[in-house]
Length: 78
Image (cartoon, rainbow, N blue to C red; front, side, top):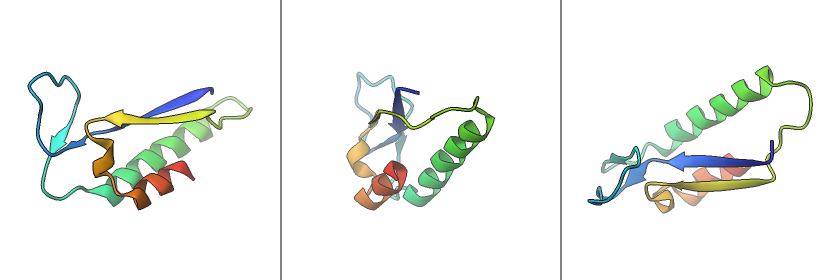
């Protein structure tokens, strides 16, 4: 695996030009989101062919990734 894109679907509001899958909400379910992303990653790792699966670069994007607390992003990077 060369690179990985993690879609962060949280926004304060939906912009008129936006085509992303997003969620506009008062409470950001950061821990739930991290748990699901890490679960998906473990699933990919366990079903992949043998070999290195560490991404070279991890990209965060989507809605407004900065709405995800730094601690949640740190968990995803580890």
